[in-house]
Length: 580
Ligand code: FES
Image (tube, rainbow, N blue to C red; front, side):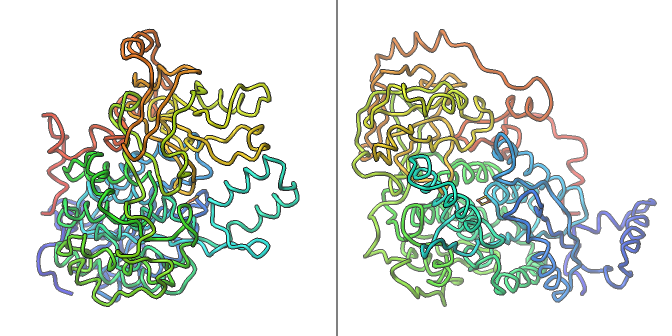
């Protein structure tokens, strides 16, 4: 293949000094003959495969399919590893490391002779980290996710990880499930490779990638083990070579219109609250601000269409058989910017031409939605001056307007120590409050927002209470749970001032979250609280010095696009990283 324009990678090879010669020698050392690589674009396959990330454990096979496609189209595929973030294994939380992985992705792409890149991810934080890093590197990129696990079955019931893990844990803690049943459930809840198969964070972020135009149509819902996912990966390998020829970079795709499409999609699918943080962070990488008010405004005008757990009944496999994300986007089309450009080289509207709904029970139409408004609401008030989130579609309708007495837990350890204490003074209409669980306080803003209900209330049959915190909540979780209270307690937010016995008012229709304590008293209490510090060195120190609050996406301040930065010197060598 002859290049229509100089490839970015030529800057590494066409040098007068020894290193150009050595770089060719290095490719030949891997067994590539000069005719295999000369004059061809070099395509990176950025792989977050890891045996420590069970959701991504099949990505090596997917990489082989991408390579086939790259060779077919005349490119040279070069697979490389990046940090992987396994949701179950990493402590205290993968969110502490999302920005680190994004830096790994950006620098691995920027520093190497790559003309385009296919991003392989899947588990919750791996997808946003890949997208953020690729957006900052800004070479042509296509996202291919690992796909959802197959549905789980237990005693005739279809189960979703890990919405139903949480539901059955409550039953086990209430003494309504035996140890044998609980162990049996453990053996069958994750049935195949792939990510969680409810509309949790992983599924949501796959949908965000597709709605933004950074993934091929249909990528979101094809099951991980379906042969069509390998075929899609192969097609992505072919298409990335074409994107290099078109010089179609993330910065041309990630426009404000694309983000508005993604936000509407988020509301229509009842997606994870985590996606709000990730979309804000991703937008920041390309110089766009996404205020929380935009999410709320679009939520009020976007019907909720997708009947998937944790907000509904079905699972990702059902979504695939119903037509997948293209079918849902076609329903949503009147509300979308259909002229937004995508990695197919065509517009979103053109991509949807052949899409259709095969099961209207799973994917509803605009005139027959599950709910007239979207799946997420932004709350403000004296307890959350910069906002807090709730997922009304996954909450108990009777608790969406509620006034209750606060039962405060100082941090996660305090919660675990006291929540099942038979002497805990707690009633079903109280509000459980957890603080010091935010970006600085925890640190890393873990998914502790789905506070366990006190065992003694579970045994009385209580299955939901108002819970609030500065933590995040797993996208697979459910209940009347307010998260991302901002500013967090450790940053001096009013959450730090709440005392057990104070009254709290939640009013979701009015979008209010109030601490019913006089403002002067809140200020007096906050003045008396010392700051919390976790790290004195290393990455943790860097994190706490630079992480932004949830309403700014928890990115590092210095990773946002230059347009959002204060004046500072260019780093040495930055000019060497662009296209020659
Ligand atoms: Fe990886 Fe749920 S644990 S997506």
